[in-house]
Structures are given as C-alpha cells and as structure tokens.
Image (cartoon, rainbow, N blue to C red):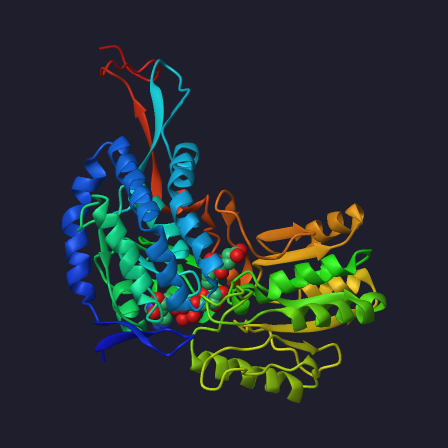
Length: 471
Ligand code: NAD
Ligand code: SIN
C-alpha cells in the first residue's frame, strides 16, 4: 500500500513543518530516463559549470537552508550551518575527485596504437537518503553522479523530506535540467518501488544495515546494476595510556553524543584500561552534566538537540533498560527532560559484566562502557562487532597506535581524534555490515562511472606477420 502523504514534524516543537502527497517512482524514473542522454552528451565542463552554479545557489540560500535543516532534524543551528558548508564544499571536491579517479588517461600501447582509458556514466541512478544528514549525505552521492553524466532520482528520508526538496530546488535553480535530478517524496514503500524499478541503472544508498541488507538481497539477481551501500556502525573508542583524562573525556563525548548520537560514525562503545576507569568516568560524568541539551535555536547554543522523533526516543530508552536487564550497570540514566518531546539526556552503561552484549547499532546518545585488563583484550573487544565503520584510540603511545591501526577492522581508524567528523576529501566507508566495499565521499567518483578502455588507431593499417601461406 503506497504512502498517501508525507508529513514532516519539527522534533523540538512538534509543529508540522511540511507536507506533501507521496510521489510516483514510475513517473520520476521515466522523467529521468528521458533526460539523462542529453546531459551525458554535454561536455564535462558544462556539467562542472552547472554544479558550480548549484554551489552558488546554496551559498545564497545558506541561512534559509540552515534554518530548515535545524528545524527538521532538531540539530543545533551551528551544526546545521556546517552541514550547509559541506554541501557547498562537495562540488569542488567532486570535481577534483572526478579528475583524479575517473577522468581520462592515455596509456602506452605497442605498434603505434594508443590505449585510452575513459569513463562513462551508468545512466539513471537512484539515491536513498537518511535523516541524520538529510542534505550532506545524499548530496555526497548526487553531485558526483551528476558530474559524471548520470541522471538522479532522489528519495529523501520520510523524516526529513523538506530538506531533500530544498536541495533539489537548489539544483533546478542553478540550471541543472529538471529531468536530471528528480525528487521522489515517500517512505519505505516508495523506496522499494524505486530500488526495484527496472529502468534504474543503480542505487546509491545511505541508511541502516537492515535496509541495506534488504536492498542487497533485492539486487542479488541484478548484477548489471551498480549498488553502493553506506550503512551503520557499532564503533569503539579505546582509552589507554593517556595522561590527559579531561581531553580523553572530551573526545569520548564528541564521539558519542554529537548530533545526539545520530551519526553513523558515533562511538557506541568505550573500552578503557581498568586502571583508568574510575578517573575517566569521573571526568566523563562531570562533562556530560555540563552539556546543554535544547532546541536548535536556543541561546546559549545547545551541544545537542532532540533525537528525530518520539518513537525513536521511546526505542532508545527501552533499549537502555534492556541493556540493564542483560546485566549492564547504568552509570548515567537516560531521561526525557521535556515531556512529550524526543529530547534525551545521554545514557552511559557499564556492560563489562553483562551476560549479553548485543551487536546492534543504537542510533542515539547511548554509550556502553567496557573495562579491559590488557591492551590485547581491549583490541579484541573493539573488534567484537560485525560492523566496521570507525574506531579511535586515545593514547600518548605511538606503538599502541601502530598496533591499533594494524589490528582494527574498520574503514576509519583514528588516533587522539573523535570517531566521527569524517572529511569529504577522503574515502568514507567501512567493512563488515557497514557497507559493500564501495566507499563514498572522495571515492564516490568510482561508483558513479564505469571505465572504458579503447585501443585506437587513426587508420586501419594491419598485417599478419606469421602463420600465413604465400598468396
Ligand atoms: P533507514 O535505513 O531507515 O532509511 C534510509 C532510507 O531508506 C530512507 O530514505 C528510507 O525511506 C529508505 N528505506 C527504508 N526502508 C526501505 C526499504 N525496505 N526499501 C527501500 N528503501 C527503504 O535509515 P535512517 O534511519 O534514515 O538513517 C539512519 C541510519 O543511517 C543509521 O543506521 C546510520 O548509521 C546510517 N547512516 C550511514 C551513513 C554512512 O555513510 N555509512 C551515514 C549516515 C547514516
Ligand atoms: C555520518 O555520516 O553520520 C557522520 C559522518 C561523520 O561525522 O563522520
């Protein structure tokens, strides 16, 4: 049963922000299919100019976009502003990435022939976006896809459709043809209709592992289509042999609670040297007690806003209780400081002696703590996940970092830095259940075009030297 209407509600206030009838995947794919060949045939410089105009449009509308992102996600205004800056920055990064990873090259070839390596777009690509970065993450697929000459049908999350619509309007206002970037409003049903559509050439997905695995299954019999999956994590931060426990606590708080924990790269598990446990927990407790949790536009500025909706807040508080019934020892309980709204205080729970430690991504401000007696045990605990997105070590010892880097299975392995805050100028992706080995960000260029090798000569001058009878 297709969704009838999508209604976006501000998490912080409950006010209705936006509503629109759900769209039709068939109509949007047909529109994109009619338009893509002309876009693909344009010179690359034409598409570069169109995308630079898009960056300028976003720059001009930055205040309105920032306000909308903050209202629709609940994230603080300072964070929404940085999301808009990332959207703008993506254009020049993608131009550089296209040139470096998917441009044209001449390769040496024998016999006066030339061997040329060029890239072609796939055609019509579907993009499915998540709600936590409703502009930056889909844009991370859309800009490189358009630049390479694809047309795109983009379905934003049903929780943040207004931000998705705003983004698409910016492309159109910049003169990117309306047929080349289409908005499909809808929820999972529209997502399924788009992903399963016979006329798409591929799907670029950012979202949860559950959805990604369902999509992977759907594409199992369609090897001709490109599928890029960017999924979640159960990311560890390890604190070992470090003298500055205040800084360690800051790094843990930034990793675990920025965006109210709604980042794929957020630290979900803190693994700490048993000898540092008491003093580190003391610092962490003091710092968490000082965090301002409030609505996006509040003054003084909050560190974090609400989670995306009440259902999510309920699920998180229930998950926290479930962890304690498994033998976890709450160090800071989660609470709902504003009745009826999805604000949460960070929850911290010691799971060292728990009977069970489910390897699931709890996408919110919950931090599970594990004490370890040896560094080897800490590393084993850090790798004790089927995901593999990000991991961080807080330590003054470079040898420990060498060992960490060599042992940890993840696409992002950091040292004395948070687990989150990934750069758009680097590849971004993970192993295990965090993705399907098609990293995004700088490497998005790779999955937006396919290589074509041509052996070429100006004239057909040919002879057979050996193995011929005399004429
Ligand atoms: P989600 O998987 O629920 O939804 C993502 C998108 O898929 C939405 O547009 C949704 O409507 C659509 N969808 C849902 N079910 C579908 C189905 N069965 N078929 C087709 N489409 C379907 O994810 P979310 O809750 O919006 O976002 C949070 C998740 O995204 C977290 O797990 C987080 O870790 C992950 N994430 C990953 C990255 C990354 O780059 N690796 C970045 C941000 C968020
Ligand atoms: C995310 O994509 O959810 C987070 C990116 C980051 O902060 O590393």
